[in-house]
Each structure stands twice: as C-alpha cells, then as structure tokens.
Length: 288
Image 1: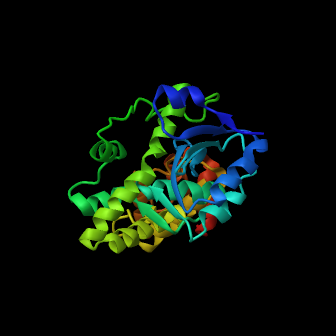
Image 2: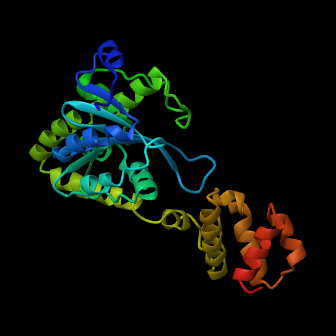
Image 3: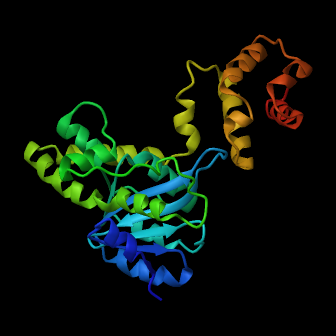
C-alpha cells in the first residue's frame, strides 16, 4: 500500500517534493525503503509538552531529496526500525535548533541521533549575531516567507488540518538545501568542521536525562536542595507530570533551607504540596 499522497497540498503550495502522510502500519515498508537509501535526511518534530514530564511526540517530519514524509507518531506504534536508520552514522541528519528535537526523539523513541548538522548553529557561525529562526534562514537563502500560523497549534488533535500538514511540510522542506548552501560557505571559511562539532554537541544535550539541564539552573544549591530536586524529578517522571506540579521551584529552596536549619515540622510543610501523599513520599525518601 502506498502512503497517503497529499497531492492537493503539494500542488497548491508549489512544493517540489512529493508529500506523504504516513498514518497506517501498512505504509511502514514504504517509509523504511525510502529512508534506508538516503544519506542526508532533514528532520523536525511536532509535540506537546504542557502537562507532562516527558514531551509527547505527535508528528515526525522527514525530508529527503525528493519526498516529505509526515509520520503520525500517535497512530503508529511500530517505529522501532527508525532507531537503526537515524542512529546510522553514515547518514547526516539535518535539524534547525536540534536540542528539542533530539530530546523528543530520545524520550519517545529511544533514538539518540549523533551525526547531526544544525542549520541554526551554522548560520550563527556564518553571519554572527543572534540565533536565527527557521523562517529567517529560509528567507535569506530562498527569498520565501513561510506561513507560521500553526506555530502554537494543538498537534495532539486528529485529524490534522490541511494548514497543519502544510506547515509541518514547510518546516522540513528547505533543510537539506540550506545545509548544502551553508556547507559550501563554511568550507570556504574553513569552519565547516566547527559547525559539525558544535551541532553534535548541541544534539547530545537532548540525548541526556531531562534533569541534567534542569539541575544546572539551580543557584548554588545545597546538598539537601539537590536531594529534594532529584526526588522531585523521579516522582514527576513516574507520574508523567510537570515537576512544578509536585513542588514549585520557588518553594524548593525555602524547603531545603528550613530542613537545613532543622526548622522542620511535617505539618508546617504540608502547604508546600498539592497532596499530602506527595509530602509523605518526600519525607520517606529523606528519612525525616
């Protein structure tokens, strides 16, 4: 079975690549066959991360030289084969601002992409200044303004609207071509290897446990503050809820300070928590 070909969107918006919506397990051989033979792949993700500890991957957008493949990760449950393809170091995976995408791939599909090129990092090396968004980079190299009306769209809703699918396709449509243009410029500047190395380092940050980047935001934390922080991460991940729903950041340091000063009374600390069973779990873990 050939995947759902979005011919109307392709022709209406003048996409040069064929666009396919992959939403049936019958289409996975089609997907696998295309990606296995590609050495350069553009990639983006659409996800929701408002009410959970782990981001929830909704759509995986993949671009090759001839196709755009929109993979419905809510409907499809047999995507294990993507790990071998995307972790293959003979392939170059092109992102814009890779850390969030690699985080989503890691937490949802256990995929740790390492052979990465980040066009945002590359553009910063080329032109300096602030990190540029995808639309600005596309406009620079192709003089085309992208439609951004679906930036805050609810990607968990089904079915997708035509506007959502067009937006998702545009988000990967130019990645490979931008990479090739930037590569030529960077090689002339003798900075291509630098861009690759910086891209790899940025992507690796998304391959780490979520708490790693969060704990770095604590300002001169005490030992007990770190212990409370790590308990909160473990508790939140177990229930798949945001850490702030367990214990707000503003209360974490106060709680740790009072415990350090031995001004500790279980009854006094109940207001720190939404539910008493959360407080009891902390007390148990800290042996208080």
